[in-house]
Image (tube, rainbow, N blue to C red; front, side, top):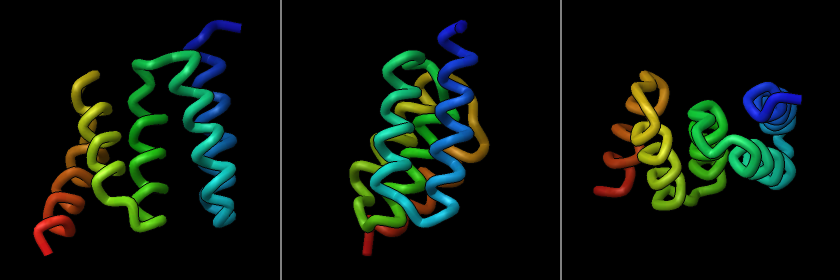
Length: 89
């Protein structure tokens, strides 16, 4: 399977786990996606969202910025803005 297709499959699985509040498992799968395709913005953004939910704003911000370093992402941009506000508090 093509690395991008495999990463997309991992992201779908991780998204489902995150939706089911299985955040630790979701993070593992997002990391798998990033491992096979480091340029997968969806994996970086999904990981950032889950880390934010777990109260790990600094790590989440790093992931959102990794997504933005790859290319434009309105979701990652919004998430970065939210995280920067949260970290100011």
